[in-house]
Amino acid sequence: MADNIGTLERTPSPTGVSGMHTVVHVTHEAVHKVGGIGAVLHGLITSKTYRGAVGRDILLGPLFSTDGPMEGRLHGGSVLYSGVDGYHNTPYANDFARIEHEFGVKLVYGRKNFIDPLTGISSDPEVLLVDVRHYHPEKIGLLKFLLFQDYGIDSGAYEHIWDYEQYCRIAEPGLEAIRALGGCENGFKPIILSHEYMGMPTALAARSRYPGQFRTIFYAHEVATMRRIVEDHPGHDTMFYNVLDKAQAQGQHVEDVFGSQKGFYKHPLVEASRFCDNIFAVGDYVLKELRFLRKEFKDVHIDIAYNGVPSRALTMDERQKSRQKLRQYCCNVLHYHPDFLFTHLTRLVPSKGLWRDIRVVEHLEKELAKEGKSAVLFIGATESAGRSPQDILNMESAYKWPAAHREGHPDLTHGEAAFYTGVQEWNARAKHCKILFINQFIVDAASLGTRAPADLDFLDFRKGSDAEFGQSIYEPFGIAQVEPISFGGICVYTSLCGCAGFVYNAAGDKATPNALPVDYTKLPETMRSQNVSELLQMTQQTREDIERHIAGEVADELYRRLPRNLEDAEKLLVAGAKLGAAMSWNVVAEQFVLPGLERALKGPGK
Image 1: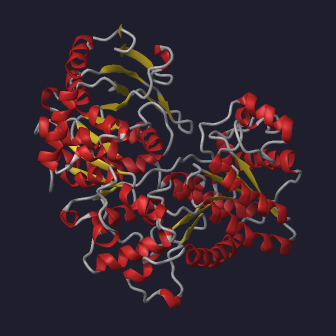
Image 2: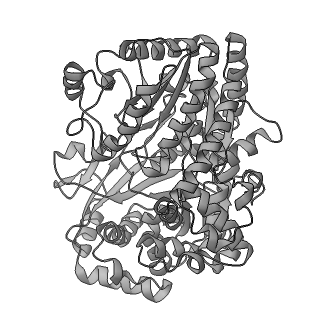
Image 3: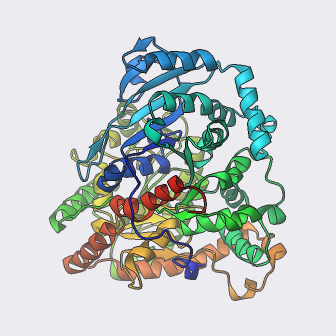
């Protein structure tokens, strides 16, 4: 599989967006960053290159709650209009009131500040949220008829799913509000950027209700249909991508192999992305997955638009200070100063493949023992929004959290407890590399209790890490996997991640010591001749046997690359800084996103 990276379609050379157009980002992360889409928004909006070409960003999404005071509606942003609270401090108030009356909604409008902590660049995009709880039934009925008539989407099958319903309901009042904000004046055509399936009803409504007035792009941060298949099958990625390659070679598509996907509400919305003026795919395999959706995607233009990497020149002194903080934190909690520091900061979901980290550590333990070295793996992952500082102090006092955990509130959720069982089992045997499981959304001094150094912050885990793990079973890009790259860390990710393609693109033919792609789809010789039907029968045991073998290879190569002295660390820092600069958000904006916006503005096929 890895041999295909870097050989798929590429966006042409850099260009700029004609004029200072409006880009409307439709997303569930309009005001609160919870995942990869929020990271993309933040990276683009604070990119100097992107800011120089795009005059106006509007973040459009649902208003998820009307609880609390008005000041909290935009999570720290400035509210200029709130139909929920009767607050009107904008010249658009009359138009907003008209839209609210017409559709039975309430609007919240204002601005939110985005700032890049590495560069200091800030931006204040507009934010538009729609409270759709009391939407007029006849209005939503007409929209759903339009979706069926123009795009073949039968919304009746998904009306009981609120996630589907709310993104249908924000479409028309959102578009009307964009028009009221002057987005279509002076011949400008606002670009509706549908971040994943959430924005597709808005993009489709723009095409049908206002033909020629908007342009539309589907921003594929994943292919939801494929994610579900990968996560649900016991063979995970090991099965799926081998099946995909063989099925595509035979001219088959996803429903030919895996049966009808129409029961999954995201599927028809993602399929309808073929009607957009352009599609962005965040990785090479996302592009392949889109082609696998149905035969019509064969002739649809898709631009690769990788995600960016935080990039700033770091001195060895800065790196060493971050390392010392992490070593001291380990000593305070686990009572030893490790020679090597490993990290994995992520969400606790099956797709992240956290069990693979333990398998690699099992092999690393043997290598560490040979040289009398020690290491620690910090895994920062949670299913919740995080524990309060008081909860942390209470748990720390009662049973030495996070060295130990207890199931139940405020500590382990069910999923966290299941993962912690594996961590406990390993730590009971480990002598040279223990795992510290930190079930916090944010990892800094304020969130880690009294045993964390007082000046420890999130970036220390990036700047001080020797290796960041990210061996996901489904990872369309993997921003977190490569965040330590420019700080001299070694990034361990699967060859299916979009970041693997970007590293190849940025490094060219030169191997880089900071990137360690792993191929868990590599089948043993005895299985390589299996056909699609045979591969579909892959069991969990078969996949785990393959994983154990690959994990051993990963551990051997990682241990070989780990820095043994300051000279080694300096080489990794210099190489990583160079690579990180070639993968920055400015590079992404210039080489990938802006040319894709320009293509959409010119219209399909241009």
